[in-house]
Image (cartoon, rainbow, N blue to C red; front, top):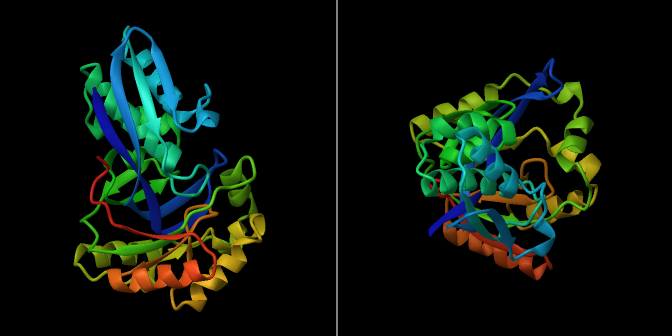
Amino acid sequence: MITLRAPAKVNLALEVLGQREDGYHELRSVVQTITLVDFLSFAPSAELRFFCDVPALVTPRNLVVRAAELLRQRAGVRQGAIIRLRKRIPPAAGLGGGSSDAAATLVGLARLWGLDDRPEALAPLAAELGADVSFFLWGGTAQVAGRGEQVLPLPAAPPLWFVLIAGSAPVADKTRRVFAALQPEEWSSGERVARLVAALAVGTFDPAACFNALTAPALRVFPSLASTLVQVQAVGATPLVAGAGPSVFAVSREGQEARRWQQALRQRGLPARVVRVLSSAR
């Protein structure tokens, strides 16, 4: 049996450069895996079978199932597998849990079936499954571009701690709705991401450089986010929306500071947790 972890991610910086001819938006982002992880196991079987400790996620549309079927079809594999998912990342939270599970499935099944499990070999399939799946083949710290499928691994981020308030979107097509709410005046040049990439290259990362262009449209789709952002700011942290929301996080260079924020937020009734940088996906 093969067991892999599938980490969540946060966007340290995210800019939208404009809308593409294919209807998607052109992105630039610095993405980081964190120590909030799902676990997947893969065992030999004659058929593909999928189990999860969240029964509502056991559907044919789950990205784990789709990734398994796509890899088996493209590689011409005849055997199956028993796939078990222990879910710890909240679904539809803006933390990339489903995409990370799909990437781990590609890697785990490639190993189980004796296929090439290198990120470069699996990247074309990952791009078919979803924009974030490609990043999770590498994990760690990376710049992504295009729809998110173009991944450039970066030098590892310095030790960072994140106080995270994870939420789950109560609406269907959450990401599509947030991008639809984005206004052209909220597009930008990618310069802020470029500056963060340059800082990481020389080890001068500043949490104040973190930025998410989807904050305003996420607030239009999830008005209740405003209260969480205000409460995070009230404890002395700089709040950031995770991806397209509705999770919120703040970045610190000091674990003790992050734990102080966590305690203060919990006293305010928010389910805050502290997580750290995870330097690779597996």
